[in-house]
Image (cartoon, helix red, strand yellow):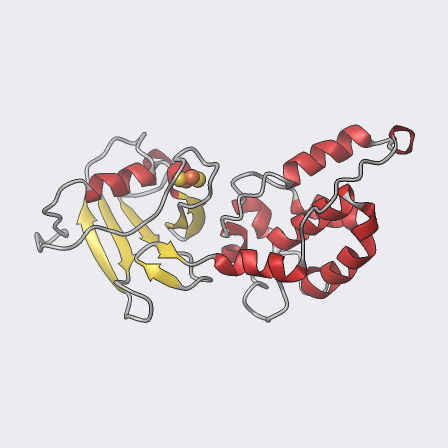
Length: 230
Ligand code: FES
């Protein structure tokens, strides 16, 4: 199979495509494929020309840290959770997330996600559980809080979102889910959260909802939006 990787040596330098030949079993993940390509000291492209190791990042290799987020065959996905056998054809294209500045090859700077959350003060300062008798739907509500809390902050939802990046005040599904989570766990912050949500998500989301298709944790963002509105 052929593997095409969009490479960029350093921030601000010109990106370029480089192709490699690879022969790996279908059960190999894209993370495993990148490891395979990087394995030897004398790395060559598909023309036999010497080149450098492909830069990418990972930590857990089991879909829980979010660091290996990239675009594989045009779809934003985690490299460690995407398998060769599930991709169509003999050509695999891999490029970095485009909504974030490239640091090196497939490594991008996603600090804007945390900076936005910090700037808006979206955090749980004090967990205030509601009294048991006022929680008729507590099972469902807790289940949804658990789902929303699974967010990896990997950035895949922002990569595919048609609204994120088109205006400076739209912060994307990550922000919407965190708003829901904070307001659900600390009712005293609800008014403040509603205002932030309206300004940075509610008025900018066109409901394409492709964020839910690519989310590795399958977080039902639309349910967070509905619960927050309610
Ligand atoms: S390496 Fe942690 S999610 Fe892929």
